[in-house]
Amino acid sequence: MVKKRDEGPSGFVVVDKETEWTSHDVVAKARGVFSTRKIGHSGTLDPGATGVLVLGVGRGTRLLRFITELEKTYVAEAVLGVETDSLDADGEVTVRHDMSGVTIDDVRRVASQFVGNIEQIPPMVSAVKIDGKRLHELAREGKTVERKPRPVTVHELTIDPTFVETPQDGPDVFRFTTRCGSGTYIRTIAADIGAALGGGAHIRYLRRTAIGRHTEAHASTLEKATIISLAEGLADYRSVILDDDTVARVRNGQRLSEEILTGAGPWVLLDGQGAVVAVHERVEGGKIKPAVVIPAET
Image (cartoon, rainbow, N blue to C red):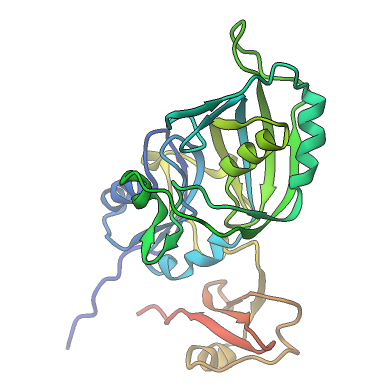
């Protein structure tokens, strides 16, 4: 009798990423913590940023894109009057503007332009690929290339009612909270607000406080982190409990009818014990197809 290979743990881990760690650093450390190489992350955070980073472990790696697609919430601080080549405090200062006459009410008025379905130009330090090479790789080579605007959605953008206290004669700093769709660049929001005010701005502080319902209150350092189930990780999506016969058919690739899967999707399909069987989604043309099917544990 052939012994079946132990696949190791599966699920998600909600980490509170520390500053100066890259998302890849967190994954590398997590492989040692959870004794498996099958770990990935969803929604990269810059090294200087902190906050919620969701890891997929084992079979959870196959479902990470559904975490990536969730809304995200950030708290940030932006420095008015100073532009940097990276749009954050880690970059080199490229331009300084006198924006001493700008009031917090001006900032709040201008910020309203950047709520809703808008377009952003990806920063040169982003992971977007152009001609097969990531922008941040080109930036490290000292190159700047033309980037096309990309559609993003900003659901909420709230500016604090006063400037953040800064040293005397220092530039004004405003703090803001935003809830946005996947692919939104917070650095670009700050830079665009600065430009709309007749100058520029860069981010000096950035913290992600939530990915969907996974908030900073649920996050912890890797040393204290625990693995949550696939179903708990995907709790933002509508779940449908299947009977045993349907579970078997779904695992064989059967599509479910619109009588069972109503609305826009995606849908998380569970067995009677609450374990994830599959995720189905609506694709172009309106058809419903299985996106990921999770085999039965052996």
